[in-house]
View 1: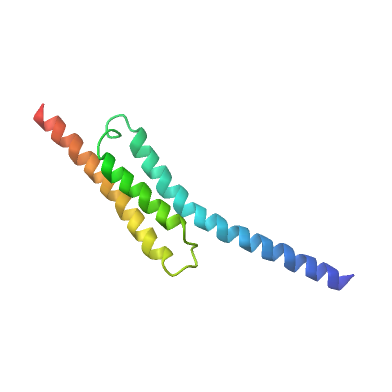
View 2: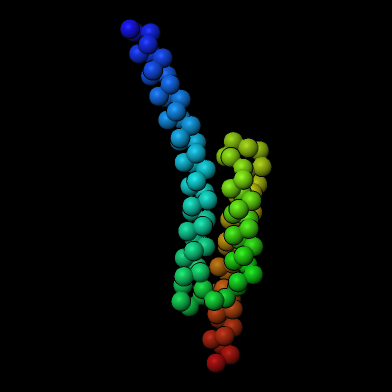
Length: 102
């Protein structure tokens, strides 16, 4: 009886650890996708930097192919974060250009 309880506990722990790893992977993707979605939905900035937004979404998709344990995940995470930052900066820059031209 005691042995079966230990085995069951180990199984539950293993399953929950696997779920935690999957949740961690989703956090980076969710965070970056949410940030990019906020930019797209912004009435003032959403229409600008469409190419940069597309590149950022592509980078997020590439990052999502790797698990956090994979060696390349950190690299693709860095690239995706920079692409999102570039999209925001370009949208703000283009908005400022339009406003200064008026």
